[in-house]
Length: 266
Image (cartoon, rainbow, N blue to C red; front, top):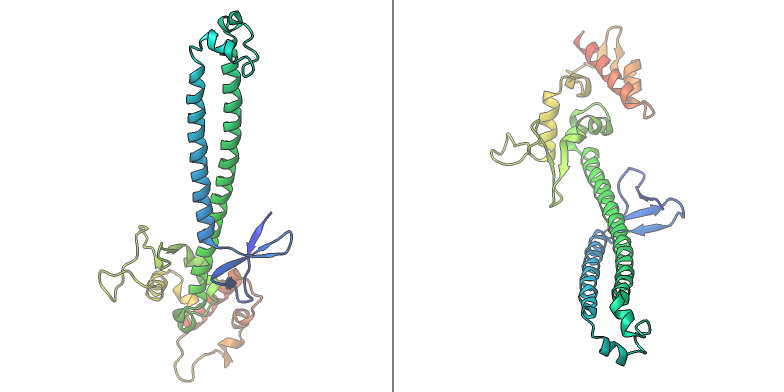
């Protein structure tokens, strides 16, 4: 069974009643997944596993009552202990054999129960981790898609910017998207000292330090600008047309942007 996060046409996660919707790729059915319910189930299974361990210890303690069993008492309970028909059999170790059989059955059942719950716990844990990873990626992607800085200053699509800088952002436990410096620590703001830079400021700072920033930033034109030799507009060059074509691959877009940057410098 494989679940896939349902996305809208613009790449946003579909949410129903506050829950992200997943699609069963085999059956085609949709399932809103409650993260709290998943983690609560994980906790419940852990508690049940603990209870089974306690029952095992109780069973082990109960078996000790057979130690030093009086043969006369065994004779008085022949209906309950058919194997102890004679005192001599008990003396010969039949009682120890019976205890071993009980212990073997208890151990086998306990191991089967533990293994079953460990498998369930592993499945729930993996599913929760996968869900968290997908939600994190979508949250960061939405920030790139809706970035005011990208819309105003960047000449290439947001997915290209995300491909270059996306790994520098993470989602905190309180659902905030923060940027990481080159050392892996939260990036500090240059506008508000001692505070962590927000997404827009952090992205702007990263692009300013990017070696190929001229290839991805929009060309700032003077009045009457935007023309290259021969009176041909930049938008009408092969490179400009490639940037405007939605079918152009990210690598081709970046290459076209670099060529336009070179043309601008001529």
